[in-house]
Length: 402
Ligand code: KDG
Ligand code: MG
Image (cartoon, rainbow, N blue to C red; front, top):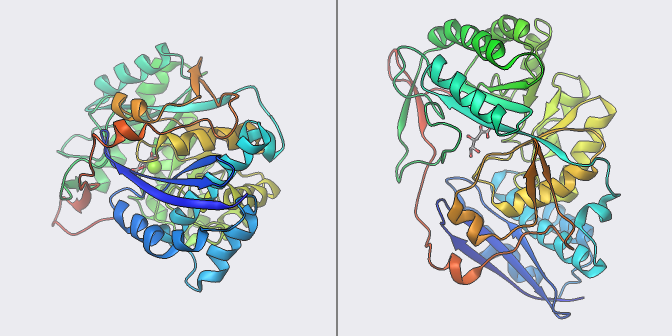
């Protein structure tokens, strides 16, 4: 089955998405997500100018060979732009192969390991009382796992808080600026989680995202302070370029740790996994080289009792969500899947087969990954430049970590 065309559709139904459509001489088509938040056009150019011309005429069934050709053959390996571009090709080819087989994608990976995919949603409040309301709302909607983020007294703007459950992370045409003060955050967060746990009772999982804002020692302090609240995980406690830094956190707290939404290859998490410095790996089908590479990361993780917890924010298109849900339905060492709701416009542009029920997402049984693109509707939403905010220290305005 020969690839006859490969083209990009860039649209902004509530936020920007880059989609790759691959067509074949047998009439089968496949879709891949190529969205890299705030850097969308870089991936589009990498694909358009350097990758897509090399695909024409290749056998669409040779997924592994095409993956190796784009990774090993390119000389310049890894990095978010490269690996997102490879992921888009990989996702589209798995979609085609599964359609050719007439099977939902999870069947090609090895079949169903579970009846549904446990997901966590977001609850974000401006203060403790508001966040308690949001957490209880999520529980009432049927979620078994909830990520809580709460405003910090004395900090005006903190990423992702005060906006209820549903918000768009890339919120401006130039990066907006947020404040940070570690001491205020460390004083407030344990009190907030005590209130959330008290309101929820013991049976609902609670998660928290630190967004890389702490040093390893500060992260250890937070992890210890949160131990009585029994978190499912503490996410991205410190920047992870230096994987050995996680030893300092691990030695001092039993709060489980999740890392990896910004990772793009197995090399970013090799030491974290092999030394069992984390409990959950958050790499995705999108930013870490597609299903082909994510499967290698998950297999390595399974040797060390590390489970998956794929990133699933709104800047990953419904195509990534569909592909991730097929992966989650199969992967033996599954932990949890993030589920941040897309806007209604996005959901209209990407008709999909997955659905939510009682705290679980179900990938559906249509052949392929089960997500389509309404190109006519997409054309009504042209690209609009948008950025994630940046973060500065309140004390002196110095740039701080994401
Ligand atoms: O592109 C960045 C967002 O996806 C990220 O800020 C969301 O941290 C995030 C999360 O855990 O979903
Ligand atoms: Mg995160």
